[in-house]
Length: 152
Ligand code: ZN
Image (cartoon, rainbow, N blue to C red; front, side, top):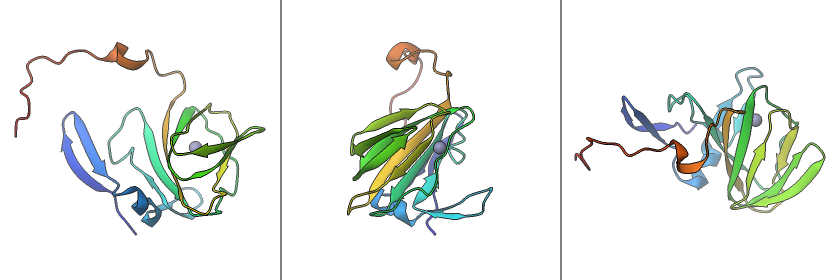
């Protein structure tokens, strides 16, 4: 079973390495409630010590699909298709997805996905508490003063 590697940690940051996109299939996630082994999935939020986002990477083999719909209690999900193609269903809407498709799903949206292609489908999913974003884009950024560039 492939393990997540920590690359760098500091007071204000954490960095992990999931490896190449083609390696996502080698991770196994043990579901904490059902103890089911889910191949091709890795969560990185906890190892990143993230306080605002859960992030997972998933690779579905050709012609594989999620066996059930799921919803969330509080978190909105954003899926980013990284490689391959397939289909998502949210409530009664079914749509094709492929590299570059970005999907936002509200907590109450009933979602399921499948890989209906002959190649692996890889995506990342970011969960954040719905309604927690206070501003878009650069509105939250500010110039950091007193920092030396490239200290090594
Ligand atoms: Zn979810």
